[in-house]
Amino acid sequence: AQSVTQLGSHVSVSEGALVLLRCNYSSSVPPYLFWYVQYPNQGLQLLLKYTTGATLVKGINGFEAEFKKSETSFHLTKPSAHMSDAAEYFCAVSGGNTPLVFGKGTRLSVIA
Amino acid sequence: DVKVTQSSRYLVKRTGEKVFLECVQDMDHENMFWYRQDPGLGLRLIYFSYDVKMKEKGDIPEGYSVSREKKERFSLILESASTNQTSMYLCATRYSNQPQHFGDGTRLSIL
Image (tube, rainbow over all chains, first blue to last red; front, side, top):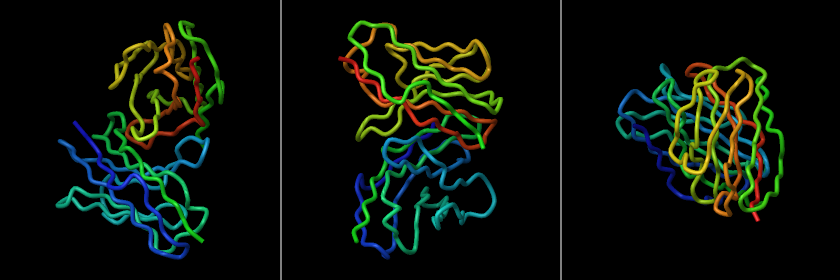
């Protein structure tokens, strides 16, 4: 079985500041990990994924995440926030060909 | 790009009505999923399907059923709609262990 915990339902950063969204997972098998972004009134868009191999994963829009097995974490970062990054972000885990299990989401606000 | 089309963006129905939410994909993916999204609860899996005429219960199947008569179409059915089924419904598809692709969602209100 898999589960995801996203720390912080709402994160607020200044434009140009570092973005850090936290995700911890639990999985009884080697995990596949994902970050999705949702803009208002839209579906979810894939930001990045980790399956196997390199633990530092780069995604779209300048985001990246690092898989740390010892910490069971997959935190999402971006060096410099833009106003357009304001959205809701979801971390998800699966055991391969099983349905994704999602965290409850983190709403990111970017202050000018 | 994968295209996942949900038949309605907004839908208003009355308590007790039978409601159909339709989802169509254009990529011949075997796997299809229905989630509901509520504030503070994230996405919760209702039903999924690995192939035509196959279905599996997710975490919250009560009050819902599904139909998959053709590979590209996966329907979610609310047998007798209730106000606690007011929510955003999201359909997704997936090929093997690749990421899921989502439709734009249907915001359903039950009055």
